[in-house]
Structures are given as structure tokens and as C-alpha cells.
Image (cartoon, rainbow, N blue to C red; front, side, top):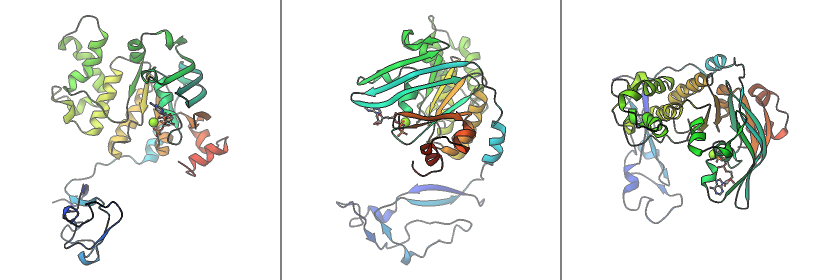
Amino acid sequence: MSTYPTILDTQPEAANEPGHGREGSFGPTLVPPARPLASVSTLNPEQPLARPEETVTVGVPPVRTIVVDRAPVPVAPPAARESIRLSSAPGPERLTLEQVSVSYGPKQAVNSVSLPIHQGEVLALIGPSGCGKTTLLRTLNRLTELTPSSARSGRVLIDGEDVDGMPDTRLRARVAMVFQQPNPFPMSIFDNVAFALREQSRKRPNRRALEPQVIDALKRAALYDEVCDDLSRPALRLSGGQQQRLCIARAIALRPEVLLLDEPCSALDPISTGVIEDLIHELRRDLAVVIVTHNLAQARRVADKVAFMYMGDLIEYGTTQQVFEEPRATRTRDYVQGAFG
Ligand SMILES: Nc1ncnc2c1ncn2[C@@H]1O[C@H](COP(=O)(O)OP(=O)(O)OP(=O)(O)O)[C@@H](O)[C@H]1O
Ligand SMILES: [Mg+2]
């Protein structure tokens, strides 16, 4: 057996027994367990960390059981990854926001935001929960209009053309979106990527005709090498990180000009997060990327430009270094220094 720990969440068996805190009460309950709640160990699996008679349970928390079973995968330290990411020259302006405001009924979610979004750049939208990041992101390809109570004013231009005049399928092929939770369709890996391509073409192309585009998208999403042995495998059997890269492959298969990512790594482990951050860095060569993230370290690592929002207002927009190192607004400084979240 190797000596590397993995962490699993389990419920203590004692918690399921009558009188042990689950039935009818939700407040904290101190429970002297009859036996150890879980085997917890690090280097020596035989030796419990705490003596059973000292262990108490408050409510019914999950117990973290460390199982020694696999070697860690080495990842470059964030500082090393940052240094790779710092060189960028902004390309043409792909999206332009002009005084964009969005409301849901009486609730004003976004207030008169104006921003340029360039090819060759990653723009990170940051700000506390509820400040309007997702709403602004979804406005860029008119997804907010699917919410009946929503109303928008101002203009969104793609390559100078107003998105309001475009058929929504065409717009969403040009401005593609990947959501927080990986959401592959319940079909094969191949068909997930082919789906978007089939939707866009008038004649339904067969598998062989689509194969080069599907493989290209999987390669650009840094997934192909891991799945090339069997593209007919159900997508839902992939890991979370692989599923998210599949969703990115599906989004970029149509060669969009802009890729919108709403907290794409929030459900992923650090290794998958690192893979996706590297991928974002690669993708920005060909398109503009807008990412919403709560992870300020991630924003520093992946973004060229940062927009800080607060209660629907765009408080500050600038280079990543300027926003993090020399913020102009006090509120930005407080946020990036962790004074509020
Ligand atoms: N479908 C909706 N109907 C009504 N109000 C909504 C709807 N979606 C969002 N809101 C409101 O709009 C405001 C902005 O929400 P939004 O989801 O854009 O924030 P966010 O910055 O993405 O937050 P988080 O970081 O928690 O994801 C919030 O006050 C939210 O309650
Ligand atoms: Mg959000």
C-alpha cells in the first residue's frame, strides 16, 4: 500500500442510530459515541488520531476519512503558472457594452455598465455574491431574456453589430457559454460535441463528416488525449474536470468569437482547475474570454483585465495588476484585500 492520502466524506454510523441527533431536532447535540466514528489516519492507517473516549459529535457533521490509496499528481505551483500567463497583447475589440442595465421586475441587477472585451484577453468579472456578475455575463449572448421578468437597456455589440438584431442561435454560436456545473448531455462524448455542429448545419452531417471538427474541438479543449481510445463512451462517466472540458469543447466546436465562463472551476478539484486555467490561457489566443470567478487567486492567474462589480455597478476596470496592486476605488481595495466577500 502506498502512503498518499485521499479524503472521502462519510456519515458516522452512530448518527443514524435512534437518539443520536438526527430525529426531530436540528440544534447542536453532544453525543458520546459508543465507538470511534471513523478510522482517521495519515501515515499510519492503523493508528487513530483521537482516542474514542475523547470524541464528541456536534450535530451530525460529515466525518472525513482519509484513505491511503493513490499517489498525488504534481501540479506547477501557482507562482510558476502566473509567470507563464503574464504576456499578452490585446487583439481587436470583439464585444462592446454600452451603458448596459438589467433588471428583474423592480430589482435592478446591473446598472449602466460600459466595457470593451478584446480578443487575446481574458476578462475576469469579480465581486461579492449578488452583485450582478452572472446577469451581466448572460446578457452578452441574450440569455437573460429567457427570464420573463428581465428587462435590458443599453447596447451590446459584437464586432460592431448590435446583438439585438441577430437570431439567437447565431448569436449563441458566436458568444458561447459554459456554466458553473458541468452539464454534458446524456449521450456519448462524440455526440456531445457533434450536437452543436449538427444543430448549426442545414443537412444533418454524418459521423464521418463531423469527425475532424469533433476531434479538433476535443484537442483544443485539452481533452482528446484522455478520451481518444473510445469517443462512444457515455459523457456522464467522465470525471467532473473532464466533463467541464467536454462542455468547453462543445462550446468552442462552433468557433465562437467570445467564450463566457461562469465560475467554471467552482465544482472542481485543484488539479482539474489547473488544467482548465491552462486551457483558458491557450484559448484566449483565438477568442475573447470572459470568466466570472469568486476565486481572487484564480482571477490573478488567468485574467489580463479585471472588472470589479458591486451592487450592480461597475466600480473598477483595469489590468489585473492595476486592480489588484493599485486599485483606484476604496471598495475595490477592500474587496481584493479580503475585507468583505
Ligand atoms: N431570475 C432572477 N429573477 C429575479 N432576480 C434575480 C434573478 N437572477 C438574479 N437575480 C437577482 O439579481 C441580482 C444579481 O444576481 P446575479 O446572479 O447576477 O449575481 P452574481 O454576482 O452572479 O452572484 P453570485 O456570485 O452569487 O453568483 C441578485 O440580487 C439576484 O437576486
Ligand atoms: Mg453568479
